[in-house]
Image 1 (cartoon, rainbow, N blue to C red):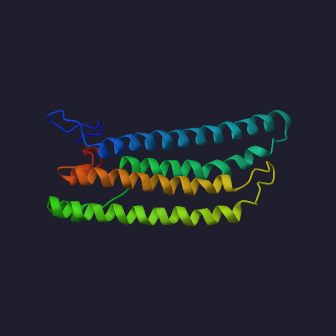
Image 2: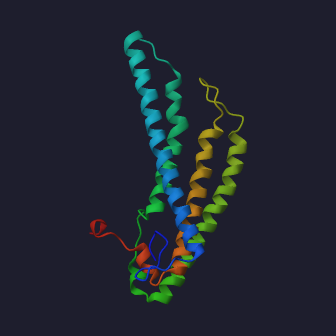
Image 3: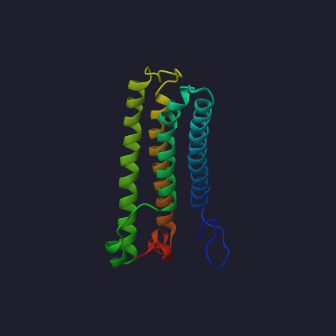
Length: 188
């Protein structure tokens, strides 16, 4: 199976679950990339505006100092989700490489289910954090701090969706180890 939703070789359409997983996967990549890029651009522009105004008037704007506090969590979580989406987190595959197809499939399913359940729980717990921070405001802008903390929920849900995508791929792949195979340029 390839990411385009076709079975290799004969051109048969992939199962609906795999096509849905691929669609979700593309959405995750697009959303995480967009959040990361927009966050870093907004941080840069706000700080640059503050520097320019400070240089011209010897007095800063003030509010740009709060922009990194608001957007840096989004930048970090966007990067974490994007790394999970691309399979770029550090991993040790010695055991996986030593197993046969069936055992590798069982191990990969167990891993994805464990990660999925853990991050679903963390997303649920993060809701309590947002309830606590909902009344706290950034002093200069008056923006509620829960906007920054809500990045945790985005990240945790992004990881959950990524694990669900990988779980579907592991279940449908002829050899599930191929899904997590390293690119040659990333090996030592």
